[in-house]
Image (cartoon, rainbow, N blue to C red; front, top):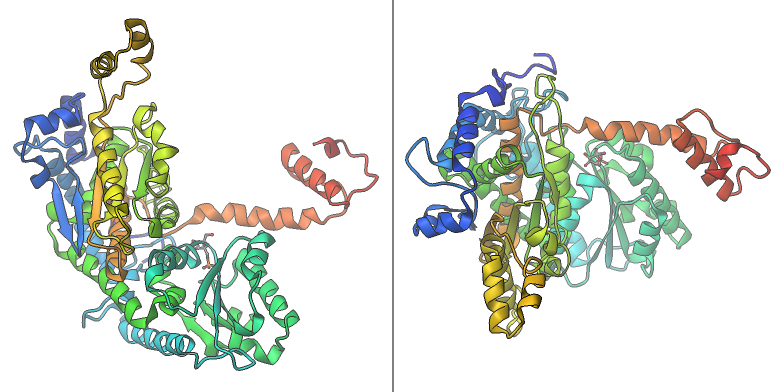
Length: 574
Ligand code: F6P
């Protein structure tokens, strides 16, 4: 099989399939039937449009889904689209270790990393589970030594600070998860994350740290990423300048990578390297050794609970019928809004301060995966694919961007994510958090008509002129859809399940759109050009090999940095 062939590619363009056409017709027939009306006409809606799996509960009743007999039931029609798109076949291919990432000729087996069953997972005729278990055991031994104080810095003191240097999938996942599970963190260990090549990030992170008690994790799948290697080199200089010797580096620098050669070339002993494999995508790598910061923070048992949660969601995804399948349902709703109701973005609103980096993590997961405009076979897509994903925790967002959700011209479907129980019970805080979360989904849906506003204002004693002037501004169209996802509390297990839920959602969307969610060629051009631009930035003479804007910016920057003194090039004005 060549890298561009894949037995799982769809045979007919998705938009030509009868299942897609049925949805086009269904959407037309539905017209502007509002959510409010759907609830008024159907008292059983909440009970019917909900799902539960791996400790997560989804209420998806506040969506534009008509319930009706076969052929007139939105969810059933969407499920038919999933079936016609070969979702089950591609799902099984992914779990089985087939090449589901044909442009890189790879399997995608993050599910094997959290395979807690006795099942073997074969890649190229070999079971990958023994190697996965070996690395997990090494991670456990190492993290237990660091946590207990048995692994010390060069002068015998226990490690107090861990700095993870990585970017993208080698940063966002562990950072998000360490933050999410902060209540379970080891008391002595402070976790720090440095990703940006902006020196300020490293300088800020290292401020106040003692090199003798600091452990660096250099995390990079490829170990070629410019930002990570630049930060790692500067961290090493900081360590050496702070009293460490070359011989001490082994106690203070460990690596997580698939590239042993590059790790060794950097100067880290491969005995202090934790490996993973090319069939783990960067944005799916939190479950691998890339999760080391999380294991150090919450302990190996906690990390295994996290894997258990992911595995529980995997078991649900691979065995539940499509209609009762949580990730499939989230994906179908996304396709429904993206392709049939023309929404362009999707909000993630965690009502949980510990999940404050979850939207940023999901941005990489969803937009690096499904920001694609060619199908698996290389033909251009003629339908919209991955929506723009964004978000911030509630209730903060309510006092910022929620205005646009309620009264703006864009309809933005939203996921509200909230634990029913707080990890920090404090007075009435959690009741207020829950009340705000549920109230927002209600307000977005029901809105407030101009007549209601008039009545309210009249009751408040306002005169007619004021009422007529203000009523349009105080009217809410409503009819904004949302999902609400709850867990009893977001502990390690629930977080694992939540992440796996979204991973599979993204995968199912990609199956339907017939795109490859596992490659990321779109990030390459910027990397290539950055090398050329970097060389030009220290050219010492005016540059004219780019477009006029880029030349102008380069020359202006060189002049500002004193590298072009006396040069009379016109672009110095730029
Ligand atoms: O540039 C994008 C990317 O390749 C991501 O996919 C990846 O997560 C990130 O860079 C970091 O890559 P690495 O772990 O190889 O340093």
